Image 1 (cartoon, rainbow, N blue to C red):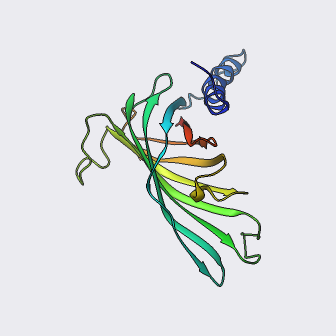
Image 2: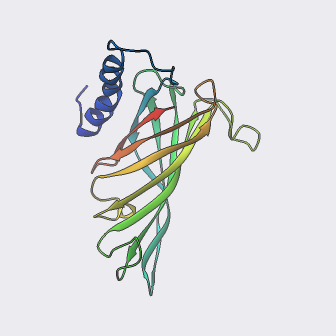
Length: 189
């Protein structure tokens, strides 16, 4: 299997936890036990456009909304959902002029993602259950990801989830290459 830049990033995130854990195991007085972080990641197949972005020009700038992508996800290492389907919806805003906290020249992206374990049906009763993990995406990018061109990285957050056997939160990144192949890596706390 050929390693891509995105899988190398995901692997580095997962392996970095081992080095950090080894450094914490050094000699010295024992600190109170902290909850252990867990590094998890998924290799996403080619992301397929389910719904194209709906773009409109406004006096403040260009807004592209509703860009929805999906792919099959396969866990890299030990993850709460081993195999399932990944779905994300993002919006992108490109300001026409400098705005507070949004200088002109970047695409400001926000959205949501969800990973559903194979065989789990999403209903209002299962939406927060152990077979589903979900979260948010944010970032400021030089290119608009809703065009389907270029590679990009967004910060990913896991909303509180039971998928890891207990209520967990997490942060990490979603990396998508120029062929729309992605990797999702998270640190669960």
